[in-house]
Amino acid sequence: MESKVFEEEFTKSKTSEDLNRINRLILTLGQTMVTLLNSPTFFDENRNTASRYSQSLVYTSFLELFRNIHQTVFLSGCSLYKSACHNIRYALEFTVQSYYIDMKYPEGDFLERIRVLHEIENKSSYRGRALVNKLNLPSTVKRDINNQYALLHKKVHATYEQFTYTAHHFMDDKYQSVYFDSNELKDICKATIKIVDFFYFLFLTRFPELEKSLMENNGFMESVEIEDMPLLFGKLLGTME
Image (cartoon, rainbow, N blue to C red; front, side, top):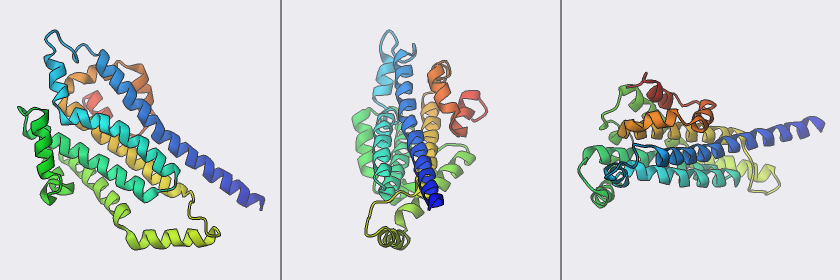
């Protein structure tokens, strides 16, 4: 009996730890916003740079990602793991589509880019791996993004496995449909960190002038150093082209 109680408490502790890791990403993104606003390259005398950011879908996806992670934490805390995975895949989708449109239509303003997004967002050739393979990125980066797509696809579309898994817990827990699964939460935590790493890589590829400002922000660097973000650090250290 004592062993089972200890195991349950340990599981809850690990669950809380993973939720806190996801939550810290919100702080990291907030620190990025502060860095951008304080960066001398963000506002120049003629505000040309600020205009460049305001017309960018990649910049807007930064704000959407901030909101998305809040939702992922909430869904995970409610044991809605499949919904959380849907949320993460959406984050990956809008980040990749935003980068594609920004780079494909460099002279377009925000409204024009939104129009293009509306036209392509549901076309199969502009989603998932098909779209990633259109991007002018290192093959290793495209492979990493595609691998993440594949993992999320299995999580989101595993209808039979998900249903039987839920039914098993529903019956074992005396008809309590809400349960915590540390393995699911661990996977969600890893996937969220990966998506944030992809975002930063694409963001800094789009706006390389901001690398110096981010590296000089001690709070930002301390918060990301504890996470596994190889693409971000490759960008900042100049080892990823």
